[in-house]
Length: 368
Image (cartoon, rainbow, N blue to C red):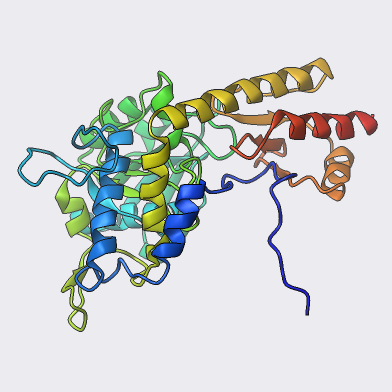
C-alpha cells in the first residue's frame, strides 16, 4: 500500500501556517506523548510551558526581561505577568478570552464588541458561551472604526476586541483607543494577534501590553513563530484572568485546570520554546523584513500588470482577480483564498519565496 504524504508548501499562498523550524520539529517529537494538561504528572513539560508563556509575554511587551526569551520566570521578581498557557490555536485562545471576561463580569445579558474584520472564532465563542457578538463596520482602510465601537458598547459589554494583524488584509486596529473605550465601559480589552504577534515587534505599531492597558492577547507560535501545529498562545496581564478559567480536576495529580481542551500534547509546548530560543529576536526580524520586502515587491509587480492591489501593511497581498482567473490559478495548483469582499489573498509566509511568486506571475500572465 502506498504511504500517504502531506501536501508540500511549494504552491501554498493562502495559509497562515508554515514549515516549522528544525529545532521545533525535533523538540516536538521528544515531547509528543507528554500532557501539559496534567502538570503535576508531567513536570518537565509544565516547566517548558512556563518558559513558553514567558517568551510570548516578552514578545508582547509583558513579563520579565531576560537574556533568553524563554528563560524560566524568576519567582522573586516583581511582575504583573504574563499569565497564560499554550493553546491548540487562536480559536481556543479567543474562546477562552471571552469565557474569562464573562466569568469576571456581572452582566446579565453580556455582549462582546468587535470590528467586522474579527476572526470567525469569535462567532464560535458567542455561540458556545451564550453571549451576543456585536460586530461594527471598519473604516476605509479595513481597521476598526473607533466611533462605531464606542457607539456599540453599553453597560452589558464584557469585552472589546481589537485585531493586530487581520486575517484578510493584515491590518492593525487602533489598540490604545479600543482599550480606552473598553475600560471606560468597565469591560476588558482583548487583542487578537494570532498571526501578527511574531511580526509586529519589528514595526512601529502600537499593539501590545506595553503600548496600551489591554487585558489579554492571542498570539500563536505555530504561525509566524515557526512552531509545529498545534501551538497557539493565550496571555493575560493579571492572574485573575487565568483563575477565572480554572475548574477542579479531582482525579488528576493536578487539582485544577484552566485550559479548554484538557489533554494536550506537549509537542506544541516544546516546539514553541525551541523555535523562540532559535529565532528570537534576530531570526524573527530577518524573516519579517524578508517577508515585508517580498510582499511589497509582489504588490508592485501586480500593479504593473494593471491589477488593483490593496496597500500592504503586514505581509499579506490582496488583489482583485476575476473569477475565471482565480479559478484557473486554483486549477493550476495554486492554493489561494478570497477575502469576505471577494478579493484574492496571498499570505507571504516563511515558505513563500520570490521564485514561487515569479512562477505565480508567469501563470497569471499566461491567462491574459
